[in-house]
Image 1 (cartoon, rainbow, N blue to C red):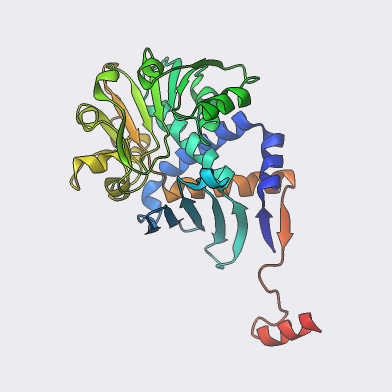
Image 2: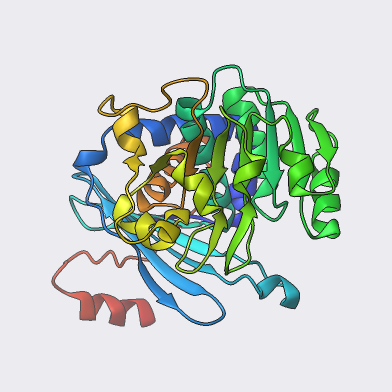
Length: 340
């Protein structure tokens, strides 16, 4: 039997655990897995690009578990009433090869992206950071705001989007959250005085959402919108004067903001900071950038967390997606018996 978590089941799990506790525990789980980075099989995701979007397969494994996610990114979808990103994921037992979990990962990807952002910021942002500027208030925005409060105590959010309706949606959804929300009229207004800047825009093009001259010394930048070839958000001059951290460098060179620096661009992989093998922030004057494109290990952590929590709380459905014949060599007879 395979445990299945559909969107209503994940919503029920969030309701039982609480969104901020879920994000905090997922950040902790992800950090623990990043500390074991060398034990995982790693590869850049397999991507099928088109002129309207991308479909990607993201696998990873260790000695116990194999996971993968199938995810799309289609920035034009909202105009047709569709989500920009949708995903499903699977977790399998390495010892037997049997699938143990199939889960929706559209919502879960938003949660794991936010948890990973906050996990990185705990290591890279200046101690005592209180204010975050959020550039882009699409589907990811509320999760980012709540994750940064849950993991870093950020309570003040200054936000801007070129879409006024998206800004109104963001304010409406977080009106009862207790966060201090300040709507801004421009990127420059939003980032003024912010300790952390999160860029989360969806347009699939090379652009400068965050200009170098807008960023003061000491700021941490959580850049999550540049996540495929030809899609960037940060000024190359800003990248040149910052300390840059990434998930998996071979993938980020192709898909992240550092693609604007060329194929030889260098950065520090975040796992090395977590494992104590590399230095993160060295002073309050450093500008640090987490150039995040999303990596399969984060999906692994999310699927393992959901699998454990769902079984603990009795959430989800067990489905006979794998045959269970009495004689494992008689699959034909088993199927005939089911149809009788």
